[in-house]
Amino acid sequence: MPLIPEFPKIDDSMIQVLAPDGTVVREDFLPNWDEARLREVYKEMILIRRADKKFTNLQRTGRSGTYPSMEGQEATQMGMIYGIKRDDWIFPAFRELAACYLHGVPLEKIYLYWMGDEWGSNYEANALPVSIPVGSHPLHAVGTGWAFRLQNKPHITVSFFSDGATSEGALYEAINFAPVVQSRTVFCCQNNGWAISTPTNKQTAAATLAQKAVAGGLRNIRVDGNDIFAMYAVAREAAELARQNIPVFIEAMTYRLGNHTTSDDSGKYRSKEEEEDARTRDPILRLQKYLAAQKIWTPEFAKECEEAADAAISKAVEAAENTKQNPDDIFDYHYEKITPPLAQQKEELKKFL
Ligand SMILES: Cc1ncc(C[n+]2csc(CCOP(=O)(O)OP(=O)(O)O)c2C)c(N)n1
Ligand SMILES: [Mg+2]
Picture (cartoon, rainbow, N blue to C red):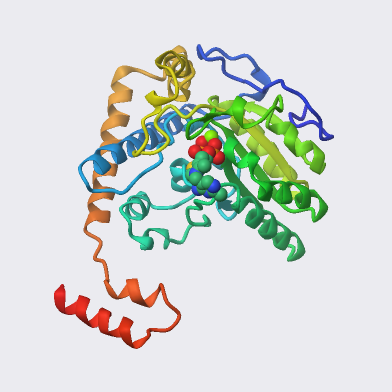
């Protein structure tokens, strides 16, 4: 039975496979992952959580610039990426460490980018660079998904954004045109509860964000974004529809457990109680409980995953920090033409260094 309703409709229910206590509530949508695969998924989740947390230390000690943590959104992004193919294209916003890493962006490049080096956006993976202007890149995803259809290419596009983007006009242009041009696009809206200090209930009076796709005639679904199994089931189906020229809007219900960025203090605008309550729905805890009940998760296994993660993270950070910068890039890539004063500054900088 398909999960995604056949017609655009307003429905505030939410697909869930694993309850927060790790018990299975929808047997029919459990992934057919064997024990080895389940271990791998948990291991990747731990790596992603720790790679994300590492940024806080790096930023506090002056080794990275401002960084937006994705703690709490692991299952949403991982499930989405597991549901697509490597040669599909993703269009991240700025909080997509997991999506980018799992889609092939080397961890080292992710560190390099947030350390302030644009070469961190130079990689082989089919992932566009970070997009800071909120709500703008779904248009690029729709345009590319449209091009894939016209060129008869088998790829789809996935655009990642959050609740705040649903207050931007550009998103509605994307929602409107996606079904008109039959773009091969999945909209992955991560409703993480907050847009900096604005809670979702002050962002919109709509009952759901998924229903915002209805006016565009876009098929839509709401899913528990802290449930990796539910997210994977929905992502796979959405990807399959997109490949048949039917774009889909997913609203994944999740929570930004950390601060907006390393420059933010969420304690200024939301309560400790709210954060603690959200932590009971932590996607890692949920998978851990499920795996523990299957006798797959043990404290030893967790320790093994953490140690492997930390080794990989140290290696990536070291590689990023040892990347040589070419000061000429400041001049060569910012301006179309090097004017005489710029040429002089370029020379002066070279001498100074
Ligand atoms: C067009 C635009 N307006 C304002 C900003 C400043 N800004 C950066 S992040 C952000 C909030 C985004 O919230 P949301 O879309 O929910 O994404 P999240 O931070 O939750 O991932 C704002 C307003 C921006 N980057 N782009
Ligand atoms: Mg948000």
